[in-house]
Length: 254
Ligand code: ADP
Image (cartoon, rainbow, N blue to C red):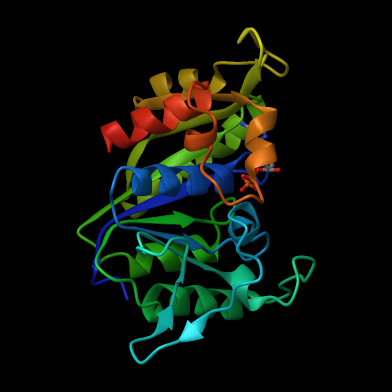
């Protein structure tokens, strides 16, 4: 049920593995740290990694009288999480469904989860622009404010696919909040010097060419990967990092 949601932020990427789930969870955690009431909905049916990142893999979804009850990360119920991953028996289980079944599951996730008065619902979407995305867009019409953050790595192949995401957003009328470049160079943990392993700046140039806000560069940071699975916020664990700066700046802009 989205009636209780003030604002939806969709996290989109052209490719898988570029850090979409990492950005979704870190954004949700940062918003929660700022005192907002947040929902995190993982509809990446092929690779639902949010339960793993937040160390919630052993949790199950419960059915309440009002609908499905999200899994809450904290006692105060400031961050509720819902993911297809909670329905799978193990992390290695694959969702082998045809399009209609996938879209009906996503519809159920959007219509049947009982979110309690959320300031923000962050949605981690599958990569690309598929039927699942169209279903999401159709179901978001009732939400007063809805926007998208596009995540890319610096390589040209990833950038190319983000162009398609921009076209998709323009066609479906969703406002693009901006572009984040992830895995943008390697930042040495001791001296903070950044080495551009692939390339760097592609996301920023795309933002400039497309006249979209650039929301920051997140370096390859082994601590980000290491935090996954522990269920803690990078912003808490990495107070002085470029990663935490990107998310802190992001919530100020939102
Ligand atoms: P996606 O959701 O786009 O498939 P993920 O967020 O699951 O991508 O990230 C893919 C992998 O890369 C994960 O193991 C994650 O921990 C790692 N990762 C993502 N961003 C970074 C980063 N900036 N530095 C180091 N590892 C990262």
